Amino acid sequence: MEKRIFTLKHQDTSCKARTGEIKLPHGVVQTPAFMPVGTNGTVKGIHHDDVARIGYNLILGNTYHLYLRPGIEVLKTFDGLHNFSHWNGNILTDSGGFQVFSLSQLRRIHEEGVKFQSHIDGSRHIFTPEKVVDIQQVIGSDIAMMLDVCSAPGISWKETLKAMDITHLWAERAIVRRDSLLDLTGRAFRGNLFGIVQGGFYEDLRIKSAQTISSMDFPGIAIGGLSVGESKEDFCRFLALTAENITTTKPRYVMGIGTPDYILEAIENGIDLFDCVLATRTARNGSVFTDDGMLTLSRSFNEFDHGPIQEGCTCRACTEYSLAYMRHMFKCNEMLGGMLATEHNLTYLHNLILRARKAIEENRFASFKKEYLERFYANGGRCVRS
Image (cartoon, rainbow, N blue to C red; front, side):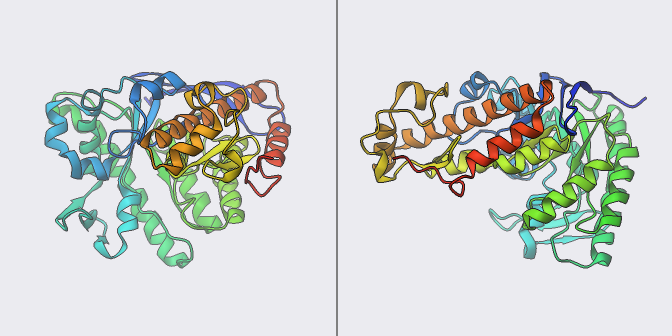
């Protein structure tokens, strides 16, 4: 019997946006939900307790990086990443497929799996669909991703078809491995294995992959091959096309989106989960979210500003410090500046999602999205304080 982990709470009458719940081993996740990225088992610049305090109970880890460092043998001795990193919430791990895809000259893909060289020391490794399931079992992932072949924009239909066919083959093998783990380890697969839709930027392949992966025994579906360098127009078009052809009974996840326009576009198309490193990366570089666009903290107009980054924000940067102090931190290259900015950006996105959920429940998400983006991008997405 297919495992059901998603419960629909409310469907907006103005669009396809929806709220729901995903039942996972380390607690229920309210959706839509943004996931902070903790590539190496830590969300950069912020303590796990503070991530939880903001309201997050699902973060993302990276199978490729955790496999290389600290390594599976280390994680085995801690019975997984939760104990190793002292994180009590849920963890989603991607399969490493995108990282291997990004290695370009350091990997070779064939039906058996993908051979690659470590970006750290050049050592040679192979990922197969089965091995990636095994690694995520050791990690203790609450949501695990199958190994897929990510298609780059601009490649031919024939090349994209081949990548899609391999992805579908690997999906079948991943399911078999998941279901056989009880015999191999004495313990059933601990998490929930999600399938990944591919098909590149060809409508017929996208539709076929969405329908094929939806029909398989996965409790959740990810939309792969988006936010990989394509135009925003292509992103929106193929997101909508793919979402239309994925079952609505399972949670849907789009990887690698973190700006308000992309997040709200995904929500409007009925997407439940998304993640991106943008919030923490830009924070470390002194750029923070406000309702009026991105604010560069080091700018001179902040020098004498006694106010917060964003009125009403509950993060420590906004409740305990001034913009003038935040500017001072970055001008002096103090690490506290990046830590406070990280907490602000994660708090801001969490609160944005809460606002989006409220709008969905009141059947006004479409108007909320329009009004929010008009203000955020009124000055080209840059906040300038007078």
